[in-house]
Amino acid sequence: MKVLVCVKRVLDPQVKARVKADGSGVDLANAKMTMNPFCENALEEALRLREAGIAEEIIVVSVGGGKTEETLRHGLAMGADRAIQVVTEDSLEPLAIAKVLKQVAEQEAAGLVICGKQAIDDDSNQTTQMLSALLGWSQATFASEIKIDGEQATVTREVDAGLETIQVKMPAVMSADLRLNEPRYVKLPDVMKAKRKPMDKIELDSLGLDTANRLTTLQVEEPEGRAAGIIVNSVAELVEKLRAEAKVI
Amino acid sequence: MSNLVIVEHDNNEVAAATLHAVTAAQRIGGDVDLLVAGENCGAVAEAAARIAGVSKVKVADDAKFGHHLAENLATLIVEQAQGYSHILASATTFGKNVMPRAAALLDVAQISDIAEVKSPDTFVRPIYAGNALATVQSSDAIKVITVRTIKFEAAAAEGGSASVEQISGGADTSLSSWVSQAVADTDQVDLTSAKIVISGGRGMQSGDNFSMLHSVADKLGAAVGASRAAVDSGFVPNEFQVGQTGKVIAPDLYIAVGISGAIQHLAGMKESKVIVAINNDSEAPIFQVADYGLVADLFEAVPELDAAL
Image (tube, rainbow over the protein chains, first blue to last red):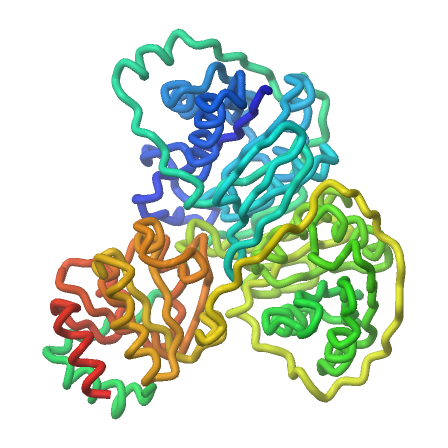
């Protein structure tokens, strides 16, 4: 089975997003970028499926401009077999990304697609579900455990009330939650090896898809900050403040 | 304008989160109809019809909707979407799971996690873990929306008298089936609606040590939460998680214990009315958002707090 893992290049999660002075967006110039953490979980799971003899080939795919290649190289260094970059300088919305990924999944005859559940930049949490819909495949989001057994997979999902277990028919589209696994660290020899792995580039325009954005961003602004608080010196003082000043207990 | 709100429920009760989505629909304006899809969900339909400000409740009572599997439910939403300008659900794991699937089938964008309605086509939504707010305008004929519940008050659960209409439709795709659900301890106060929440982070060092927080929580009628670090470390299950990828809450009082205050955690709690931080590292970022900070060893401070209450 071929496994397609969709990854996104995002602002490093440890870096605080800064809004541009003109309110047009978040300033990413010279900012540290990484693979979206949940996408690493997705790729790690695919690697484990290959190690278990369930997956034969793992393809990482991403949609984006020049530096997207760095993110895909990281995926290859983690252990993916090859990479596909769908090249565009435009910032596509999840629906458009899902249309692109559908074509790639079909062209590659993938038997499973795994994505991260959410990108930590736009926090949309949509692409997996949309891709699953467009392919007409089964859907297993927010997975914390994946067991594949031939034509069926059993997936435990992280839901608000606890854990839900579902069974899905293969092929399926799944999204990784944080407890699915712990992504491996990349070692230097892996980075060197990744440089020689195949990387296909496909121009977005060559796919002939309607990828026009449906949303226009009118403004991006910083939220109101909180007023500075105080440091209390003891538990007794804290309790007194909460009772008398804040009146919350 | 006309709005259809997808009701979240367990076939017995309307989830509180739905009441917030109803309010968001009311802000958009026009009629507000509800869609209840489930199995033996008559009680839910009756309760939904009593929500204030609702015009009509559509009920699809069918085994194929019993466990709200996204593949089946999305087909029903797509059929019902015709004639509505806005389709809404709360931004819970229920809404996040099914709504993008329905949006893709309708070939429209989803506007995730809206925090404000500027006009019927323009909404504010947080991005980058709430470190930025984007105002976006939709050009789609049907706007599919999930609603950030803490930003909209709950609609009154009683006082309405909507008509109830039985409907059929939607496909049984047989793509997936429900196996089981491990539900969290039901004695716990619900994290998303609690007035007071006490959360633990990596500094708690073990799951057993969370008993200290539960003891304080019992005295305050509070819910217990956790940071992603604590969940990652296996101290507590994921349903405790407060943050960008967990639950987003805004209680009257949030007490962060042994939590450093990573960006992704702050995203889930920084709109709490009063924030208390207890941490032995005076440089921890949590103190920057805390109204009251206590630099102390939590293993001394928490038992002391427990005794003082």
